[in-house]
Length: 603
Image 1 (tube, rainbow, N blue to C red):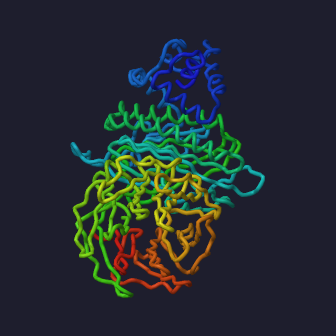
Image 2 (cartoon, rainbow, N blue to C red):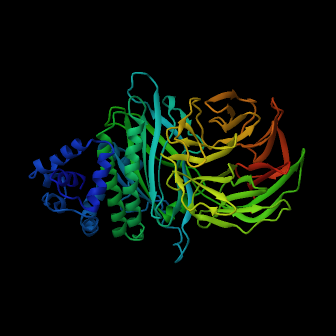
Image 3 (spheres, rainbow, N blue to C red):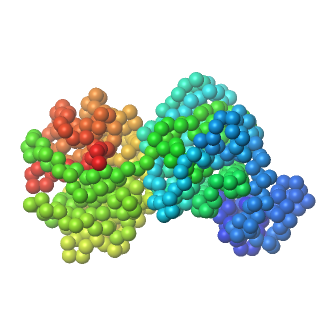
């Protein structure tokens, strides 16, 4: 289908919806001339097409388009032949060990077949799970990678491998995402390497189908930017396929064959695209999970699959593990510290799925958080007497990430990473409310952004997909372009920002959980080092400036809250009694007191 679409493009014909989709994937790694040359293979070998392609595709002339509607019509005819391939596998997580599940293959059979074909497709279901009730809400979940075990090294002359993982995923509810892990060096046979917290494959809502394509790479000469571009193109195809798979129940084998056939076709297409650009690709598979499989796998680590590269130059072997966890909501809890004394925590009638945001503007305390049922960004404000306004939506904004707030130049600034991994900003005044037009920052970013005010100018910091930090400044009407950091921090969560004295401070949790600090006086970031090598944080820190003083708040591995003060030097961290939280808190000084808010662990 991709060859046929490229051939029609070379002939000056308008591609169909399906062909345009597939050709766009090719453009992710090939030049326009190469795409048309790719299509020439189809037109120059008319007799050989019948040996390579199913009859319904081989008989097509270049003048005849092939659409998504055509594929839906032909899929039942294509499916039996495709699912017989040894690199396609159906896994019923609830089937007895000796049960005869159509399409089932042993690990060894599938691994051999995937190695021969250069790719694999796995369809996961769980026949023992109760069917979802009519009108059941979508699942809100996070799939992330946890570790990999090397059971065979590649044939690289260096003696040790440098492995990284890349993925793209999409669900029937419309969310699509791409990710690349950091490179794990010195990978040797028999070793287990743990991936960083936050190595997420997918985060979002799923009704009935989630598709993830996961790749293993040996880092030598491959272009990271080419890989990212390629993955981004693939997500659209995955999302469209997930939408169609969601309409097919896995309850009978006919439907299972269609699941498997579509997954297999994606795997073959992805492999063809990768081979056009890759020199250090180890292996890659397409994994399709129905709703029952997602529920069955939820909450415990599981083996995702084996990645064996016998056919390509880098022929290592790795077992990859991950988790699927539900994204749960929790009540917002609010506590005030006066001097060094913490008050009694107060539970607010608001629930969220992620860290809230706090800022002081025009004599009021403002709050932004994410509503669980639809991931809408909500806001409210509190006066000096402690009375909260009724929460309301910020336009139609939705996210899986924590929003951020700051006050500068007479406006309340707000930023959020959208579900499309792009950063959006708005401003608010009490007279005009929230700006109807948002500003979209260039590029894509991961995690939550961070806002703070320095010399009455709003600063915005975000972490890029290339594992670099970027900052931008607001000049009163618009944001500057992103300025890339040069400190080389590798993070698995967002940063904290706050002014202190004549400097803007930026603090983050590094890969090993250590706290890293830096300052900016209006130009470049300068490292201030690690304040205490014994401090460890499970999540991003929170930071609140108060003139020449500053308070750092971190969540320990025991879910407890720790605070540390800076007034020119760091004081020791103190454990705060009777406060446990699910992740990062938000904090700001208001009326001379430290106000803190967080998602409480207990419901």
